[in-house]
Image 1: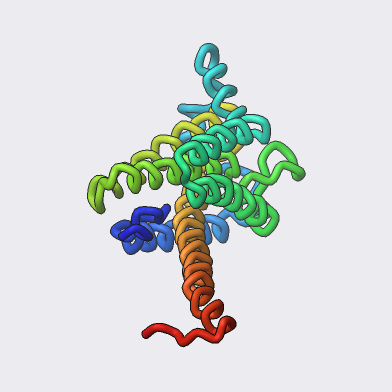
Image 2: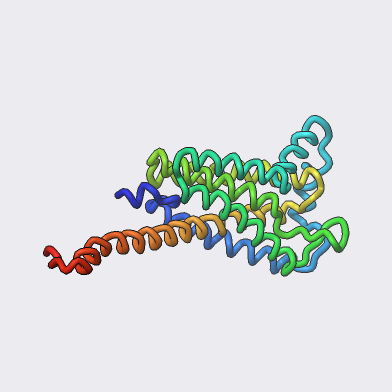
Length: 238
C-alpha cells in the first residue's frame, strides 16, 4: 500500500491511459504520413486558420504570453516551479516525472519534425508536430496525475481530471500557435497527441525504475544483519 501511494501513475489509471496513449501515438503516425513533406495547409487547416489566424490585441498579447511558456526560458520557469513544489512535498518520483515527461515529449516532437519534414513559412521551419503543444500537454498531464494520486481521486474522477487538464492546456497552447501563424492546426493536433502518447509511458517507466531500485535497496538492507552475524560466528536466527 505504501508503494502504491508513492506511484506517479495511479494503478487504476494505467489501463485506460495506456489505451489512450496508444491511440494518440497512432494519430501522430497517421498525420505524419499524410502531411510528410508538405509545405501548405490541408483543407482542415485552412478552415480553422481562417477563423483563428492573425488575431489582434489584446488576444495577440495573450497568444504571445502562451507562446513564451513553451519557449526554453518559459519552460524552465514552469518546470522549475513544479520541481520545487514536488521536492518541498517530498515527492522525488514526481520531481523526476516533471522533468522527464515534458522533456521527452519535446524531444520526441523534435525528432518527428525531422522525420516528417513538413514546413511552414520556409523550408527551414519544420512544423509537425508542434513542440510547444506537446510540452504544454505533457506538463499539464503530469501535474494532473500528481494531483490525482495526492488526493486519491480514483479511476473515474482521476481520468476526467487528467484528460481535462491535457485538453485545456493543449487547446490553449495550440490556439496560440495557430493564432501566431507558427503552426498549422494539424501540427497542433499532432503535438497534443505526442504529449498524450509519451507522458503515460514515462510515468510508468519512472514508477517501474523506482520500484526496482527500492526493492534492491530493501534486499541489501535485509541481508546486512545476517551477514554481520555470520561474520561474528553467531548462528542465524530462524
